[in-house]
Figure (cartoon, one colour):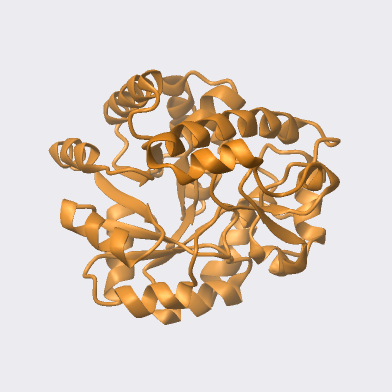
Length: 324
């Protein structure tokens, strides 16, 4: 096992270099706990935990701790200055996470400089989602402990380049690289570890598990879909999101209208457009998580290698067996 994988396992406390990425929907406490308990590493998506699944944030973390004695992380999405209420809430979530003994933060978007500063004061590791080399190097320079490489095969808000391109450009960055996107089975997992990645982040594969609280229709759609069924739309978050092609998704087209498209091109307006789209998207995904008839299903290109709904333990054992 490569030294960066050893560093990743040390940073997270996991036994197997597999992360359950933060998802909306899909970040229910039972799933997060099951992943960590099976030797992987679960990461909480706070908005899903609270707004979707209805947990008080602290009580949600405490529930995970009751379900497993293994470590898990928390994700913080940085939106810039567009929503002070959200920033205050994120600060509160961070304080609660520290009080509850969380030792790993995964940050997304924005600049996590202040989060890194706070984390270092509490011996917390910080990894950051990145779309390319430029952002990765900037994040390393402000002190993050690892890089989550979001490639173009991922589900939800997807990346813009391949896993191979990330490794080509960042192999000598000096901190662990996690491959996020398009990993559906043990062969996919083995391939990226052989490339030199320290670990992998799975999303779609964990949606199609018994512990994940989404509809059976959503899970079955993942099992039934192939890569050709995955399309990109910018109507969810302003950038490309990877989803399963359904009538609900295709209604009205995959791209934003002229007003929002204009706002997305303007630096000062872009963050407002994205927050507007994401607020609308949350309402759709709230329904899709619990209603079989609402088919707004985020998923990545790894669907082609997902053939059944399994338990989290079965998934991780199948992947981990590659290295045994």
